Length: 385
Image (cartoon, rainbow, N blue to C red; front, side):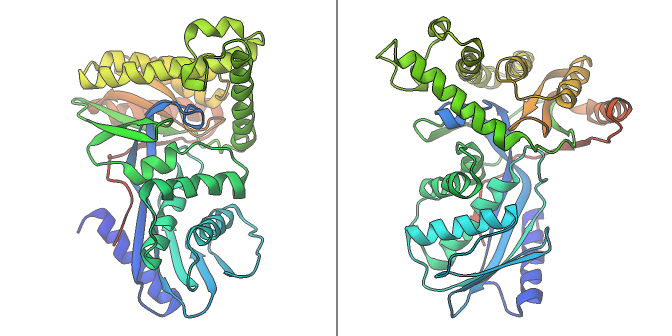
């Protein structure tokens, strides 16, 4: 029995203990890492994400009335509401769950309510998309339970609309897309404009990906995220007023940047354009197994996120600087929404323990906090048992 099968069996047991009956389905959805392509997805950019071996699970069964009861193991809370009665969810996890269910009900009216048990081991606030895993797992569960005629891409769009309508976050769909479509042993080149992807082999040879969680929770991320969305929109509009051939963000080239008068807005667009170029360069480096070049591109991404997009913070910058001071680390950068969360680092396999000990010691001495150093495996996307 593999790890996923084991935790599925355990969660079905929790459902049975909580609700005194057997689960009809268990859906699972993984968290994700994003190798490169940060803060581009909501403007139709490029990225290279992949799912990791941490999951959110939803086990449950139908009811015979219109009541929905969802229990969160991690938050020790029960969400209960009637499908035909408006409800105001109180906590963040409830907003995700309620929003997904209401939007799925809008898509195809659910015939009855259900009971479900949520459990997850995707770290919260660490930049590996626990919220997207929750949305995708719940979407797959409801789709299976009610046999909804909903494609994978339509499911991902419902997840994105939940962010927009119920959380007030104008997100792209990189996180949900990666959680749904990833394949084990591969990385995905995701085109967020075309909503298409291709897989490339993820053979990193003697190198591996290590995440360092700063333990700084991303309280600023949602508000600043919305700011960056608006700032990039202003940049696009400024260029479209001068160049009618620019239909969208992907039409912007480097030579257009000087025509944005506001330096801050220019920097935001500069990050977008340069990050898309880095995704292309990075994918070529990975395919040709030029990992030294891949590391340099990774570090250039952090510099852009720090200086042009301004979504880093002192703790993250410290972790990147300390990582790059080690000659066995090929590259390091902020990963995720920013203002906390984690760094992603490319380094030699045999130095993982050495790196973890060193980075933990230095970070503890500087900030009085113990970071979490983790190595993840790349796994398949969401599914249902």
